[in-house]
Length: 327
Image 1 (cartoon, rainbow, N blue to C red):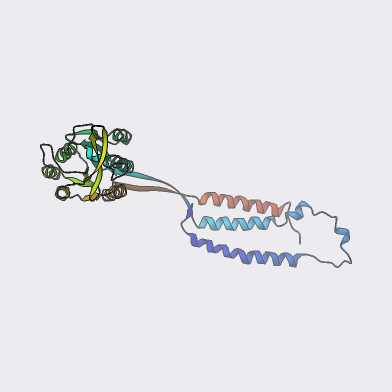
Image 2 (cartoon, rainbow, N blue to C red):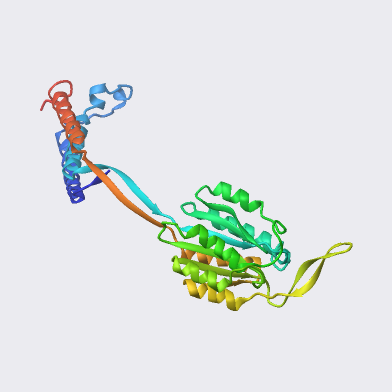
């Protein structure tokens, strides 16, 4: 509850002189007589009328307070909100070639990319998000969906070796563009993560970027891998061994893809950097939420006025009957 005219509460200050006047009046109106001792009155109990002799004055004070509150015009309100969201269509494009098993990111590149992507998806409940994976070829692991539980379960199943090995960056990007080109969303983005250079596929990465730009799709590219060398799994006759190999990411092409589509290029040299990159993209691409607030106000002075009237009538009745005072 709030008050339209709270300045009226200054009128409560008039209660101070009224209370002072009442106290002084009571003192002067009491009869007095001199006695040698008051011991005889020690066991005399005051009657209920004596105990309630101040009640009419208290009721009068309450009446004044309630009337001042009514003058201040109390109001209650019933408010509600109307919210509309404008989500973003997002395709995650993830490299799952065998080099993504390198351990320069913890525990390896592909698992780190999956974990960070899952966190990114969970932070954007209003967006349509899909997943494309690629290596020597590409396919859609999950079409764009608002049901992120399904998406996260399919993301969890992603692993290296699902498709033929290689790095078809252009093919993976083109597959994502195909999924987004007919979208009616005002904002369409692709987040492409890879750790190598395009070495297979019929579509050049820059050509795929130009197609994305023609459909108004913005591409953010992420190069995953440390600077220098990283431990990469190599299949030996006796099993898998890890050997240190140079990290070769075609940053020039990834920068050109981002620049062509109005996106940005990022380099993730460790898991912490990768998390920061997705957090930065999350800030750059915010879902629009429009909120309209409505409220309906109700006047609440009537209950206070009626209560003041009841107390005033009660005071008058008490003062004229059981608590009547004689001069």
